[in-house]
Structures are given as C-alpha cells and as structure tokens.
Length: 143
Image (tube, rainbow, N blue to C red; front, side):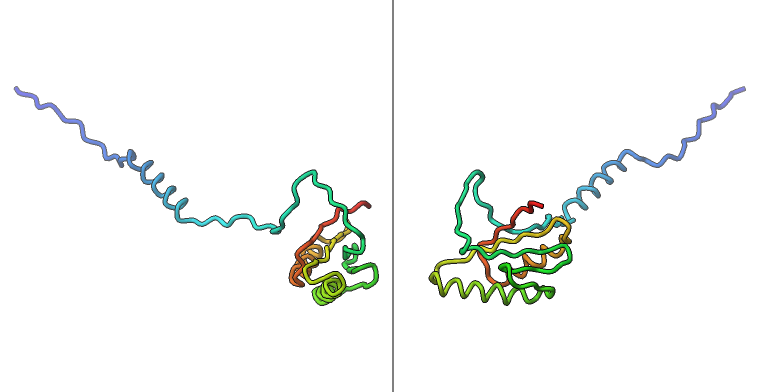
C-alpha cells in the first residue's frame, strides 16, 4: 500500500520586511513638510567685546522701571501708563536734536529693577523702539 505524505500547511504571515521602510519614509515626509519656527528674540546690534566708550551724562536719557511697574524718565517723570513713554521719548529726542544738531542721536539707557516683571521691560523697550530711538542701552542693575 502506498502512503501519501502529508504536506505541512503554509502559515499565514504578514510580511513585515517593508514595514520599516514605510515608517522611515513617513518620518522623512513629516520632517520635510513640517516647518520649524526659529526662536525669536530681541533684535539688537551689540558693540564689539572689550570696547569701552565714554559718554557724557547730558547725552543719555535714563529710563528706570521700578518693581511696582512705574517708569521714571530722566529722573523727573513717573509714568504708570506704558503708552505715554513713546510720546515722551519722541519729545526728548526732538529736543536733543534741536540742541545738538539733526545728525546727533540721544542714547537711551533702560534700567529695570531686578524685582520688576520681565514683561514690563519688554513693553518699555518696545515703546522706546516705536519712538524711533536708534541708540538704546540696556543697563545692568547694581542693587
């Protein structure tokens, strides 16, 4: 009698060899199509390191932000409304230009108390820039 051999049944397998290729292609696609927003900061030009410049006090307009959020401009005016800063700085710039000459620019020194909110410094700096100031110094507090 003749015996027939039983053939082993072929198992049903999902081919996973191309799965890694598909995953890497999707990863590359998302990396290429996704836009990254670069970190934005304050756009300021800094002087070269080690360069020390002597400036007369009458050529500087000092602006101080205290911990309560009030702003002192030129040692005489206290402001609690930030939007007034632009007008005052513009007026001081025009007075300086009328006195020194049209090509001269006043240097604005911004000093913020260490306990003041960071937001206040940025808002005051924005107002100074809106006033058209070109020479801005951010002073280091010595408290």
